Structure formats: structure tokens, C-alpha cells
Amino acid sequence: MTQTHVSTTINGDKVEYLCETDETLLDVLRDTLSLTGSKEGCGSGDCGACSVMLDGRLVCACLVLGVEAQDRKIETIEGMASGDELHPLQQKFLEHAALQCGICTPGFLVAAKALLDENPDPTETEVRYWLAGNLCRCTGYDKIIRAVMDAATEMRGQA
Amino acid sequence: MRFEAPTSLNAAIELLENEAGVVRILAGGTDVLVQLRSGQVEPDLIVDIKRIEAMQTITEEDGGFRIGAAVCGAELGGHAGVCKLWPGVVEAVELIGSTQVQGRATMVGNLCNASPAADSVPAMVAAGATARVTGPEGSRDIPVEKIATGPGQTSLGRAELVESVYLPARGVHSSDAYLRFIPRTEMDIAVVGAGISIEMDGNGICTHARVALGAVGPRVMLVEDAATALIGTSIDEAALEALAQAASSAATPIDDKRGTVDFRIKVAGVLARRAAIIAVQRSRVD
Ligand SMILES: Cc1cc2nc3c(=O)[nH]c(=O)nc-3n(C[C@H](O)[C@H](O)[C@H](O)COP(=O)(O)OP(=O)(O)OC[C@H]3O[C@@H](n4cnc5c(N)ncnc54)[C@H](O)[C@@H]3O)c2cc1C
Ligand code: FES
Ligand code: FES
Image (cartoon, rainbow over all chains, first blue to last red; front, top):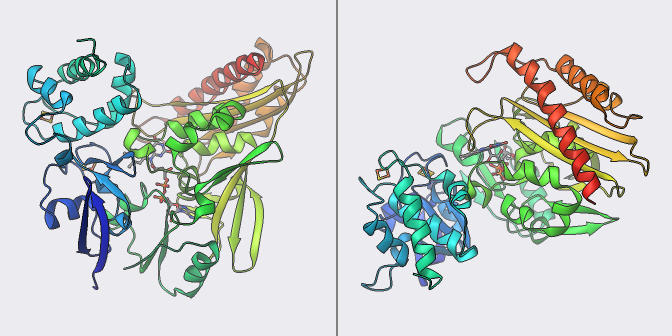
């Protein structure tokens, strides 16, 4: 099979790669570009562990083909912290112990950031519905929701 | 597998026409990628329609809206005009999957995937929506209920695609609603779905109605008897009872792990009744 050459932007950097047409964006990120922060939980859009931003919209990288990324803008978990400084959501996940095995965490963080960028003051119900496509088998969700609510408060400068 | 992302409709049709093997059109890919991965389809060519400008747009047309085939759920849900005119269609589209799925999934993909349980389809059928089907011979507008012919099967020709869906204009005292039953609160496949659109006159009498059911037959069905039960009434208790009965009688579901035949028949009536009540309330808020 011939490979396709793709140029795109990931976390603000111009990136070029070769991929097979049946490879997903998640395959490319993890296997070709070694950006292994995005996880594969299901490969079928159900778990949200592969959440990334594509042209400003939250999507599952396992439901996007690598070739579709041509000239798009992708943001992954690797772009979330600024240098050594964690994003408030990352910090709050640590403080609230909102993770155990951590497989779901990058997806939750990317999805929660997408919510807070759009709606800085969500209700708990809004947070729960927004994150309904992110599955966690360890925490029971409560700590995750509390971490997101707390990060929202801090980010609004009311902490 | 070849991948093409044409930037014009003509180029897309030409690609479809010239491929002798298996072709898949790619909109949001939330069905296509799952099918690729499971080996359910092995296409020779994938035609991505998302780079065709006209398919990415929602345009006002004769008091209604034309929705391009590549418009995703999140974008439709953010369009104030469509939300106001066809709230039932928007709520049905927004039920499709998670936030992540909404960032990709299209209403037209939902229609063309031809699942009997597709959430947006009963709402579109109730709305009297038409699909613009375009191929080498040109375009034709057909009612959306004529697209699916059975589970996973459509009436589209080999080199045809759906270019857009048109949601028509409607009178002042009118509205619509969609309800589905699932065992959870989010992220599941409809056990039954019911879409209803109504129009009332100035005296509160129903002058026009359309009722459609999903997941209770091999394809989404328009239930004319259910609409007849509402027309000419004030949608009072007696009319709602007749509506529920007509909906239940029309249902021809199967037994599966999600629900039994008896349960689905009963729920078809219950959901039709509840959706009608919501549509009536919304028609007053105008
Ligand atoms: C996690 C998850 C949850 C889901 N939940 C729901 C749900 O709650 N309710 C529901 O109804 N569905 C659900 N789905 C299924 C799917 O998301 C929807 O059917 C969606 O609307 C498909 O749209 P798409 O743009 O992604 O279609 P695609 O996957 O791109 O295409 C679907 C089919 O339609 C064909 N097609 C697409 N566009 C055209 C066109 N313009 N002309 C002709 N053919 C075309 C494709 O070739 C393919 O066969 C879910 C899927 C996932 C992964
Ligand atoms: S790996 Fe993509 S949603 Fe589970
Ligand atoms: S922490 Fe283990 S899946 Fe969420």
C-alpha cells in the first residue's frame, strides 16, 4: 500500500508524516509521532481516552483517519502544560486524586479543557453530560467532577 | 484503499463514478471508522466530503434551512435559527453519541447509515425534510423517509450522494419534539424513538401533524394513522390516547437484548404521547 504524505499542525508545531490510508489519527500520534499521551481504550469512539482537539472541536482521535489531518490544527494532551507549569485542570486532578490507573486521564483533561474554554462556569450537571463520552473504570467519576468544578472556580479567579 | 478529499461536488461525483470497486463516502466517520476497524467494510476508495465548502454550510432558504451534508452535530446545535425553527430535529441530532462524537457526526451520515435506530431520522421524517440526492445525472429532492430501504441499505445509486437536507418553513403555532428510550441516560442505542411535528391554528386546533417511529421496524417509519389521530383535535387526552394506540399498532419490532417486542410496542405509544405533549408546549411558547 502506498503511503500518503500529510502536513499538519500539532500543538502549534508544523508536523509532517507518512501514513497508510487506514491508519487512524490515534495510530499516527502514538506509533509514528510517539505522542503517547492520547490513549486507546476502545478504538470505537466509546471511551474518550483518545480525545484531542481538531480545528477547535473535541473529537476522538480513533474516529479520525490520519490522512484527514492534512492542513488541520490538532491539540493533544502533550500541549496542555506550559513547560513545567501544569494547567489548573492537571493540578486539580492531582490535588483531588481524580485518577488511579491514569489511562482515562489525558482524555478527561482534554475534554474538560474544551468545556471550560467554551463555558467557564458550568453546573455539575453540565460537566457530567459533557464528559459522558469519557469512561473511567477506577475512580467512580466523583473526584473527576470535583476536580473539574474546582479548576473552573480557580480559572475564573474566584479561588 | 485509496483516499480522496475533493473540494467540489462535481469532483466527488466523478470519483464515485469512476471507481469500479467498493466506495465509502466519509462524512464524520463515526460509523465508517467503526465499520473499517471491525472489517465490516473493506473499501477500495474513501471519498471525504468535508472539504467541499457548500457541504459545510447551513443556509436559509424560503423560510427553512438547507443543512450541508458535512455539517456536524455540534455546529447544527450552535445554529440559533435552526434551533428555533426545528427544536425537535436539533434535540434528536444532539442525542447522537458524546461531545466527541458530536464534533464529527453529521445528520446526513446518520440518515445514510440507514440504521433503524438512527436518532435524527424520525425527527427529520416528522419534519417533512427532503434530501437532495446528486449524481452524474443531476439532482433530485426526495423525502428523507425514502432514503433507507432496510437496515444498512439505501435507495442511493452507485455514484450518488446526499448533498444536503432541507428543513422546510413552518407556521407560527407549530413545533416538534423527539424522544427516545434507552436504558441509560446517555450514550446508548435507541430501543424506541419517536419524532412528532405539529401545527396548530389560532384557535388551538391541530391542522397538520407528522409522526415517525424509530427502532420498531426494519427502517424508520412514518405513521399516518398516528398523525390522523391528532389532526382536527385540540390534542386533548382523547387525541393523545388515540395517538398512542396508533403508534403502538404501527410498531413491528423485534426481540433483542435491548427490549422485547411487547415492551417496544408499549413504549412506542408512550413516547409518541409524551413527544406530542412537548411539541404542543413548544408551539405555544412561540
Ligand atoms: C460512540 C458512538 C455513539 C453513537 N451514538 C449514536 C446515537 O446515540 N444515536 C445514533 O443514531 N447514532 C449513534 N452513533 C452512530 C453515528 O455516530 C451516527 O450514525 C452519525 O450520525 C453518523 O454520521 P457520520 O457523519 O459520522 O457518518 P459517516 O460515518 O461518515 O457515514 C455513515 C454512512 O453514511 C454514508 N454517508 C455519509 N455521508 C453521506 C452522504 N452525504 N451521501 C451518501 N452517503 C453518505 C457513509 O458512506 C456511511 O455508510 C454513535 C457512534 C459512536 C461511535
Ligand atoms: S480509544 Fe477512542 S474513544 Fe476509546
Ligand atoms: S483512572 Fe483508571 S480508568 Fe480512570
